[in-house]
Length: 131
Image (cartoon, rainbow, N blue to C red; front, top):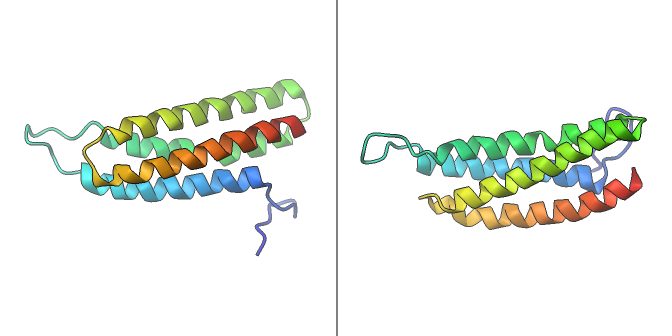
């Protein structure tokens, strides 16, 4: 079954990978939130819980940036969205590294997300050459 955009154009592998990353980060976040939500022994919340929401928010922004870049006719406008994608990918990777240091059993799933981000970066390079 092919996923179709509004313009009846099939999604590129790059766009599909962005959607996969969003799905994966959402699932990992749900797992991590369960571990990180109880209060610590000092009565405060675990500060790492905020990174779980960050990875979801950042991964959710990947696909719209791709659509925006592809829809722009001028290269200067496309470049803004390409830079935004690069920034989102780097910050997403950094937040994965932060979550790996958290006190959760779910952190063992983060290397999977990082592996997918690495694939995403390779696809991004190819995609940028086609714009």
